[in-house]
Length: 332
Ligand code: NAD
Ligand code: LMR
Image (tube, rainbow, N blue to C red; front, side, top):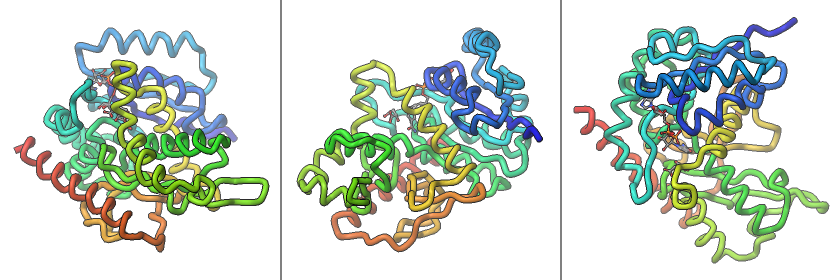
């Protein structure tokens, strides 16, 4: 029997990421080739004409899985009955700006959209915040939508996770699909900690630790980390716009794994509400290694954390606590 269509909201749909993301969703990249979708696209009035152009292109592409398109500048209409909400709307960072600089513009958007989602989305709607500062926007959304279960509000660090896989695969000249279990801890910012301590590569001799194959701790503890931390800025420098196709693709990975489940023996990184695991302060949206099953994520427990890692986990947590305070001061 055919499944009912899933309603997927994309905010900021007339923007760069939106333009890359909506065709992926309509093609089944996010929810599978047997899952039809109804796309809800929200943007602000100055972008209404461009948004309508995106809708026209979606019609023209004749996607078999696409059962309807709502394109609107009305946040209530956009949120009505949505099962999945991908929150991309906001202002991107430009060259020379830190994520903190976009804070005041973006957190107030997430406060107001929290109420609309809480009141109008489907029960159990899964929310992914992409817009920066992603962790803190997600936290504000959670705090101003108290009836949405905290487990349903997440932010995107899968792009950083995929970047880390990409760097290891390039360094070792192996297929990226053979590398797994890197971890992004903390903030989607330059304090994030890309950690390969438990990462492995599939080889003809079985799974081998990345550290053993790379055999260069100076690179793994130095350039590798800073390359992943600074990749967003490097893309902005090269393209003059922030990453879009990789962000859209990673957003699809995040939702797909959350809904459909992670493969056995594999974890991924998601920004989720901290419960104090790994001595990360509770009450922050922090990126952890997670596995997903039956539509729920769980933090992978029991991984060893050495002193080098401990310092890095704490530093990015500190930044998130500061961002939280700054966000509240912007909203006051
Ligand atoms: P963009 O400027 O091209 O698009 C953003 C869109 O949001 C615009 O169309 C704008 O009109 C719209 N918008 C602004 N305020 C809105 C509101 N209140 N409601 C709905 N829509 C609104 O930017 P982009 O390149 O698509 O990036 C979007 C966001 O994603 C930025 O904040 C960027 O920094 C962030 N980002 C995050 C990641 C990540 O990995 N978490 C990666 C890349 C980009
Ligand atoms: C990215 O990681 O590419 C985005 O978050 C853009 C940015 O501001 O770094």
